[in-house]
Length: 206
Image (cartoon, rainbow, N blue to C red; front, side):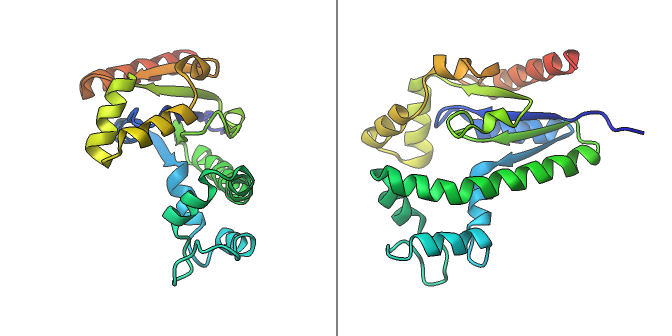
C-alpha cells in the first residue's frame, strides 16, 4: 500500500515574528515533524562532524575556533558580518549539508506516515530552499511587536534590531513566495487559530 503524500512545508518570517512558537504548536497538536535549520546547522558544524572539518580548512587563518574545535559563533558572526565573500564561503559549506540532511529526513518521515513536515528557516526564500518544499508559509507580526520581543527576550539594542530588519525581506516580498500567512502579533490563541485555519485549508486542497 502506497502511503499518503506528506505535506512538506517551509516556515519563514522576520526576526522576532515567533516562528519557534508556531513550530511548537504544530508539533504538539498535529502529526507533524518540525525542524529548525539553525539548530540543524549547529549540530552539523559541531566538532568531529565533516562540516566542521571543512570549516576549519577554509577558515584556518582566522581566530574563529574554540579550544575544543567547535566554531566560536560570535567570532564567526563578527568576521562574516561585513565580508560577503567569507559569508558566501561559510554558506557554501553549511547549506548543502543542511539540505541533504533535510531531504533524507523528509523521505524517512513520509515513509513513516507523517502528515506534515515543517522546516523553519529565516532565509527560506533568500537561500532558495523554498524550491524544495511543497509550499511556504509566512509567520507575521508587526514590526513594533517584533522590536518589543527582541528587546525583552534577547536584550537587543535598537541599532542591532535596525540592522537585522534592514537585512530581511519586506512583507510584500515574502508574500510573493508564501501561500499562507500565520498571524502572530496578538495572543497565543489567535496565532493557534491562524495555524488551524492554514492546516484546514491545506487538508482541503489535498
